[in-house]
Amino acid sequence: MGKIFEFRPGSYIDPVNGTVGTNTNGEFVRSEKGIAWHGGGTGTQIEITEMTLDKDSASIECWIKFGSNNNSAFILGNSDINTNKFLGFRGSNQLQLDSNTNNGIWTLYIPPFDKWIHIVITANGDGNTYIDGVLVDTVASLVDDVTFDLIGGAFGTPYDLDKEHYIGRIQIYDHVLTEKERSDLYSEFLRSVPTNKIIR
Image 1 (cartoon, rainbow, N blue to C red):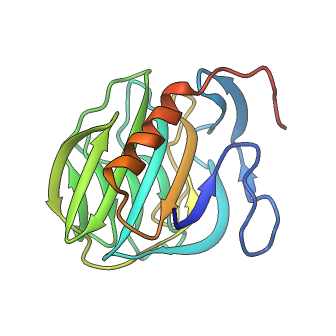
Image 2 (image 1 turned 45 degrees about the horizontal axis):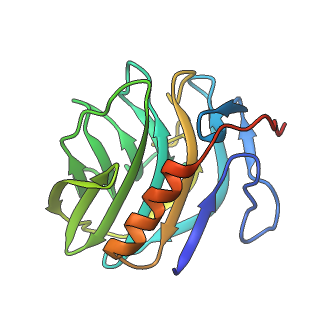
């Protein structure tokens, strides 16, 4: 399906260097969706080789569980302190995919707390956001391409993917996912089951 990036906690392999990304203060735990990664608050991140999301044709899929306070909870980010390049919740409970300050996809969506949700965001002229298989918002798409080199950090500061926030999976594609592709991915999310396996 043209997948260009995949993060599955405990099995993430850097596509360039062939090594596991550097994990700072986070840990891998059992969850309702198998192995999940969750941080330890401020100072939590996984460093990854820089990748670029094409503003004209791309999709991101995530399995996320947010706690009671989701403000400034980042899923993906960039270590360059001079950029606002991130995917996450920031301010007024907005789900944002930002290519620079105010140049991204802002979805006015308040997530359910303490519950796993399936997110798909597509960029191609319009920015569509799907939560649990349902289209929840269509807004202007990205102005610029987005580069990421962190999981769980943004603005050059790794912060606030805290103990109540979990990442089960992140996948990035080089095209806009079709309805069938989105449906298949959501079905996979629904079929996932708990695991007793712990990866340190």
